[in-house]
Image (tube, rainbow, N blue to C red; front, top):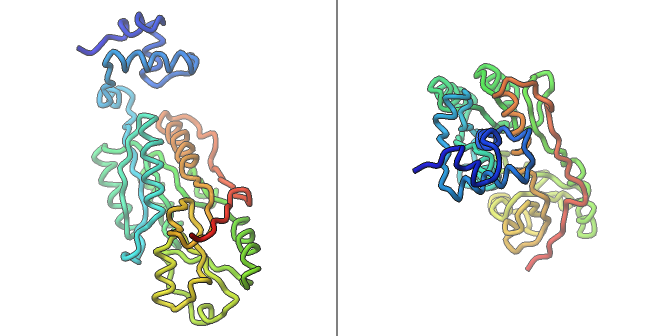
Length: 293
C-alpha cells in the first residue's frame, strides 16, 4: 500500500508540510539535506508519485518535445544526436521530466508535429535546435505554437524566445595554431549537412578540414580524395576519433539542458524568465590534443 504523507513525515522526522513541499517539487523552504532525506525515506517506503494526477492539478505536463533536424546526408549518422539523447534524457529524468525526441526534415513538418502534440495536450514544452538557414522560420513556428520553449542555437534577441548557444570562436584558431607545424594555413569546418567542399579547397594543400567524427573523415577521403592527413577530427568524445588522433573538446550538452529546464519551468509556472539566453563559452582550456594510436 502506498504510504501517506503523514507516515513519510513521521519516518523522516519532519513535518507533513515539508514532505508535501518536497514531493511536489517546491523545495524553496526546505534545505537540500532535508529534501534529500525526505525523498530517500519516501523511496524506501515505496512511495511512487502519481505524475498524471500532479499534471492535472498543476497544469504542468512533464513531457517535453526535443526536436532535432535531420541531415540530408542520410548515410552519415548524426553523432550530435547521440550526445544530446544520452545526456539530456538523464538530465531531464533526474528532474522529473520525460523527453520525446522528434526528428524533422523540414520546418513544415516541425510545425505539424508540434501543433499536433500541443492540440492533444501531450507536451508541456518544446526544445529545438536550428536547421541551417531556417532560423527565422523555426522561430516563427515556436512563437505560433504558444508553448514554453527554448531554442538550442544563436538567434536574435528580437525573436523574444529563450535560447542557448555555443561560443566556439576560440577553438578553430587554437586548433589551427597546433596544425601549422604540419603545413596547415587555413582550417575549414565540414559538417554532414554541408555540400562537399569545392575543388579549389580540395586541391589546396594549405587548406585542412575539421570534422566531428571518423565517419565524416572517411567521407571526405572517399568522395573528394582529400589526403587523410589534411582531415582532422574534433569531437567531445575521444572514441569518435577512431584511433586517428585529433582533438577532444568539452561537452556542453548537460549545462544547456539544465538551462532549458530552469527556463521552461519558469514559463510553465507563468513566471518571468530570469535569463533570456545563455552562452557556453569554449576556450583553449577546453581543447586537448590526442595522438593517433
